[in-house]
Length: 107
Image (cartoon, rainbow, N blue to C red; front, side):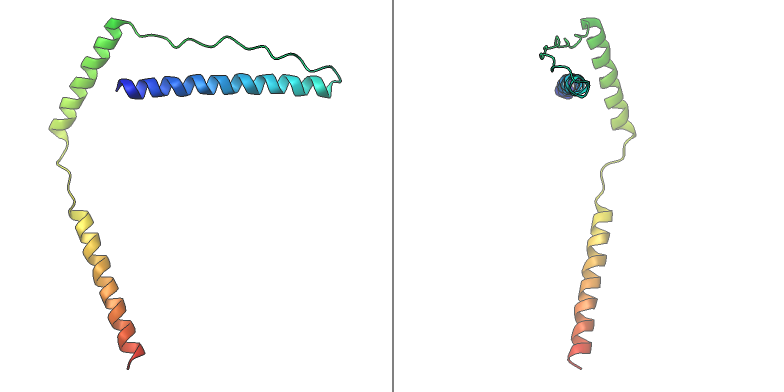
């Protein structure tokens, strides 16, 4: 789970940088349309991702572990019988199609 959380935080930072870039370009274009000189680019401060407290992290880990064990108890084992049924139906249809084409073409 930590890798997913890190990935989400990284995406959030990238999106924030993109929004800041769009804001700068909007400001430049609005100044150009008003006849003023384009403003110098000012790099906004980068947001610092919040760090969870150790207590919150331990509580989250406990809840995830509890959810995982409950899910394992209630979930049924994975079944592939539906896949086999679809496979045999498609195979039967293809055999019927080839047989039907052979019958009508070489009659």
